[in-house]
Amino acid sequence: MQLSELIEKKTAAVDIKGVALDSRQVGPGFLFAALKGEKTDGSNFIGEAIKKGAAVILADADQKEIKDTILIREENPRRAFAKIVAKFYGTQPKVIAAVTGTNGKTSVGHFVRQIWFRMGKKSAAIGTLGVMADGLNYSTGLTTPDPIVLHKALKELADHDVSHVILEASSHGLVQNRVDGADIIVAGFTNLTQDHMDYHADEENYFAAKARLFSEVLNNQGTAVINNDSPFGERLIKMMTDQKIKVITVGRIKADITLKNTFAEKSGQQMTFTYKGKEHSIFLPVLGFFQADNVLLAAGMVIASGFPAEKVFDTFFYLAGVTGRMEKVADTPNGAEVYIDYAHTPDGLKHALFSMRDHTIGKLHLVFGCGGERDTAKRPKMGGVAEALADYVYITDDNPRNENPFEIRQEILEGCPMGEEFVDRGDAIRYGIRAMKPDDVLFITGKGNETGQIVAGKVLPFSDKEVVKETIAKMIEEQK
Image 1 (cartoon, rainbow, N blue to C red):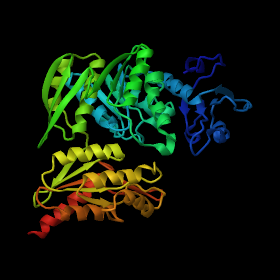
Image 2 (image 1 turned 45 degrees about the vertical axis):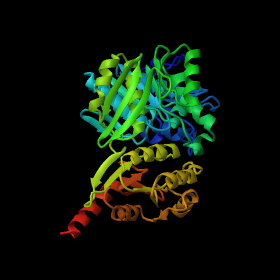
Image 3 (image 1 turned 90 degrees about the horizontal axis):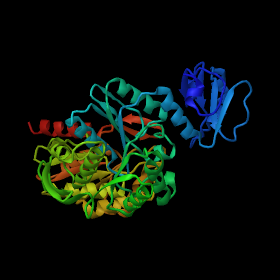
């Protein structure tokens, strides 16, 4: 593809053979984006990229001239690169939606994809669980992948006749312009609570990152679907109204789709909501009252993408939760139950525990930890949530990374003095399972469906699910 087809500036006739962010991936005729990151500066690798055959370098506006190589300077090279990559790969599915927020992105994306499928559309989701489509499933490594991975995936999906796709837009991905090249016609907002303060510094910067999806990325002819149960949702609604963008609101008080109440049942919940003055009462076969909020936001997004509301609501009975989210893993020999979940923020843990309490007849046992090299302020807060809402708390590790695991656990214990400390996460799970009486529930949070534990820069094989299954199998064997 000619360089002139990728950028708006006048330039020499150059045939671009590929695009790269990593100098090690550069080949002859490539465009190399020398971007500044948190840990490395791409400009330090320009020389290496040129040696490997880079024909064009994209860099910051202050980049010095490069001899015998075309240099494109941009005030925002990340955004420019996202748009270049979009043009380079070309084809995208007809309908692209994106959802952002602290909690619920993966579940909303999962529900949107299922509803589209029920509407007869070949659909996909790209997010925390990777690329998910019929016959096409693989990990991308990030909730919101870099522009190259993203647009390769979008082209691949389009080539497989996928017409509808939903993206999870993380705050990091939005700040770093990863989704700026996608033609997003529906944008959804779940909520905003404390997370990633290690990266964004404060709540206002965190909100500004999320707001980019609506103010800068969403197509001007698109629709914003916003949960208005928080001041941040109200701010987004005003922002969209000022920009004359169509808005569909979802919430528990006064919204276009208003959730009236939910009643927990053994295998899900009965939910009552209104839409355009009409009341609907539908069984949702998914645990967790917060999932009712997620389903209604997903419904609003599907309606915004052009489908009749009544038909959308009819699909609720057939929805399934995301693997690793409020997922029942097993029953113990004495009839107690074990669930796993991904909750890793104070608000996420609070909602998950409230929901699990509704499904617990006996005592509620909790295994959890906090990630290393992440927002440290949330650790005692999560400890406080656990202390208030669980009957027994087993504090352990959850991807300590390069931090001292002992120190992380001590910070959690500041908010949860009743908690029992376990150095080994597997030991915490095994203890919790054996401590339960009939009708008790063990809730293991933080990792969900993950299959590794990040310790000292290494990913060690570990699965909450596998530990649960092995422990219960051993208990059954002991009873023979």
